Length: 466
Ligand code: 4AD
Ligand code: MG
Image (cartoon, rainbow, N blue to C red; front, side, top):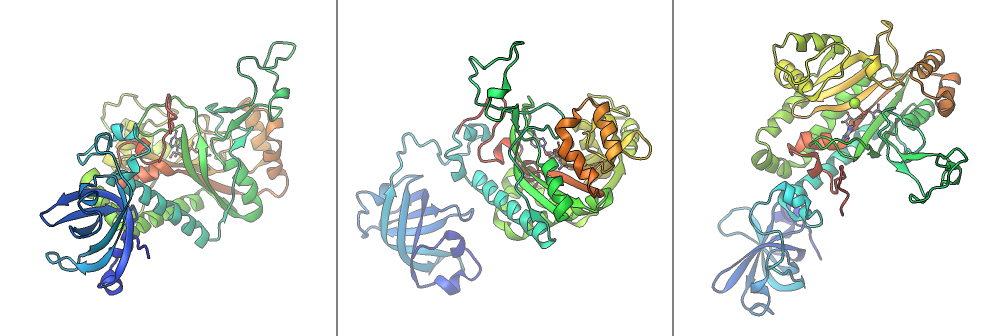
């Protein structure tokens, strides 16, 4: 029977496996040939560390193939589980048979034992999950996704699948990828020379969604508490370590909730998933803390154990103005906060996660609820150390007249938002929600520098390989 290496490393492994004959399957990380036997370090991706197999020279095919196996070869090893004579409690296998499943050409295999740059690894994205770091990222990403579902399911939120293809621009930022089946070389034209969308697949312009929020609101105003968790797309030309053209977002939406409920929920959510990773990804987190981002564990523990700061945009701007810092973009009330401002607030001033609320209405999306001051909206951004903005959300405008007036003022066509407006016409309720940038969350947890290394196949300007 095949046993995964993770099970062989678990705390009850000795009880279960010592003296038993089992099979493991995986890829060779290293092979060290001794006089009468070889040590083979096998990894199957179920866990970070390898499992040591001892292959005696008397097993079948030893001379001809086994002892020559190189890094990357795949095999099935069968044998007895024994305790390593030099390391108490550490198990290893004394192999009785090794079946080579796939050899690996050492001349051309790009993953040699030395450390590779993440940039180089991106160019071999089909092999990079076999490295310690990208494998660990994949497992932590998986744990964060699972913990996300646990958190919302435990609280009675319904998981809703919002569409990927949409005709509405939720953020109103015009950064959408168009979806079309028109012939790009010769699209059908209307008499006045414009592209004739009547002959396009959806009979109107359609795009990849930037957010599932608007459709999320539809379900929240029927099922009370919902969340979406899916891919979102932004055609912003940002070549940075924090932006992707395709990224995943977690978007809860709560009916009968205001901005304070929203803040309480997001703080509980972040603490919950961080704690889940600390408790369930020990080995991987130890690795990140030691080799990728020293201190990351401590930082996560601190976030779990400290109440988040909550402050208004206006107050944050005052802090920034008085900071004496020489910002590249000098701050002024009305301006959006830049990454340097966000990092000053979290890393220098507050030294803990900060939820910033009540932004100027002119720099935020149309759906945010207008505050009584007439100048700001009930927005909230969550900022964390190293990353800056990790979550964006708000209480939504639930008053029909205010929303209609706002759409007019912003020059947005009321006809295309007819269904969104009807949610306000038929049994409207105060409601609120937010969007967590999943890759930013993973970057925060793992300490990985570049967002392109925490998603299996990154898409960014000029790049959509694999
Ligand atoms: O702040 P954003 O634009 O908010 C929304 O889209 C709302 N509709 C969410 C809601 O209220 N339901 O995006 C939310 C988060 C950001 O805080 C950021 O973490 C992440 O999504 N994000 C990106 N992550 C990677 N690459 C990009 N280009 C991103 N743009 C936003
Ligand atoms: Mg935002």
